[in-house]
Every structure is written in structure tokens, then in C-alpha cells.
Amino acid sequence: MLFVSGERLIGDPAGELGRVQDFLGLKRIITDKHFYFNKTKGFPCLKKAEGSSKPHCLGKTKGRTHPEIDREVVRLLRDFYRPFNLKFYQMTGQDFGWDG
Image (cartoon, rainbow, N blue to C red; front, side, top):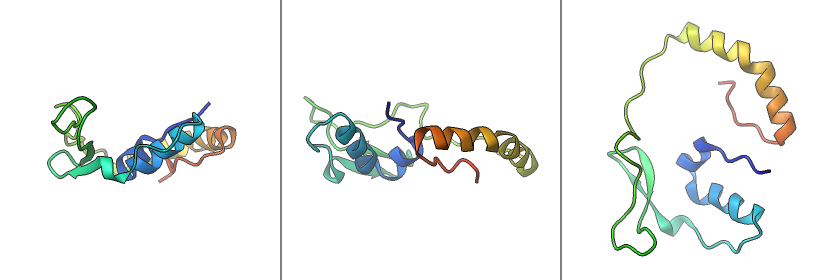
């Protein structure tokens, strides 16, 4: 089983998709040249969708501003979930960096 990081898909889409291609035993076809960063959305987008001449980006609900959460609430949530996250990191062999 492969766990894909949404954070890495945003920061390094080609790298994360490279991991997926490797895991599936596929030749690495999707690379950095297939993406551009959409400043309006704040996300990487595909330069050209398969079978289309237009770029493809996330839908209208993606890239919206997230609500501000009180720092103390974030701290409490991180403290609560830390042992579960650590166990998950051990199980997957992957640190997703959710501890702040």
C-alpha cells in the first residue's frame, strides 16, 4: 500500500507522482515539465490534460482561503494526535510532518 502526501503533491507534484509511478512499476512519464504553478489558485496545475489543448487545474472550491484557527486550538489538536501520528508514521515508514 502506498500513502500519497497531499502536501507533497502541492509542493512537488512531479516528485510525488514519481513515487506513485515507481510503486506501480511504471516508467516515469510524468515529470516537472507537465506542471506549472497557478498563482491565482496557489496550486500546481497540469499544463495540458490528456486529449485536450487546455491546461487543467483544480476546481473552483480548491485554492480558497482557509479559516484562521486559534493557535492554542492547533496546539491542543497536535498534542492530542501526536502519539497516533507517530504510530502511523511507524506503520507507513513515512513522516508526514503533521506535528508542526
